Figure 1 (cartoon, rainbow, N blue to C red):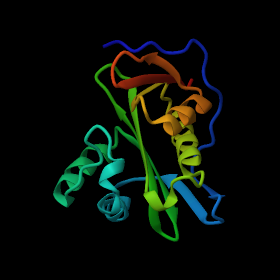
Figure 2: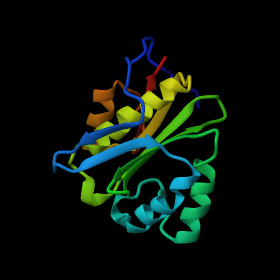
Figure 3: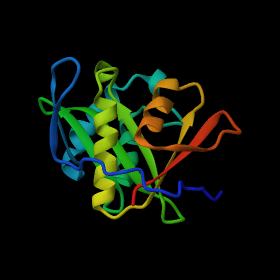
Figure 4: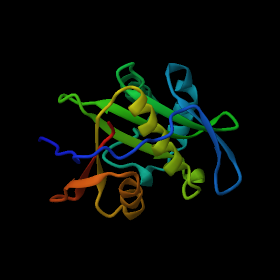
Length: 174
């Protein structure tokens, strides 16, 4: 599968670190994530509602979460974590594919959904991607996930393939 990308870059995104206040007046710290964030991320993913899992991620069992984090906390991946009082509220990652492009995945803990964290987490991840020189990012989203699709479009993602139950979207960062 070859992904088509928009001709023009989407614009500039804010890079971490940054602090924002969500719609619930909670202070959210966004920063580049690394192996030192593993414990908070494991706890977040253990608390993640199974109904909000898509495409088999995040995994459900702790040992599977640990193995998954081994992959996405790799130095070739780009990760941003959203923290509220030191507790992971959200996590987003860019994982390189075989074509040299990056696949995006984003997760917001249920207690923080609908408060704007997904938007600032996505902006911050894309900003970190720009800082690291990443040009092409793509994702797949279930076609019935209207809030996510609207967020991705707002950020500049364009639909590339909508022929299955998942929609493929792409953005050019640089």
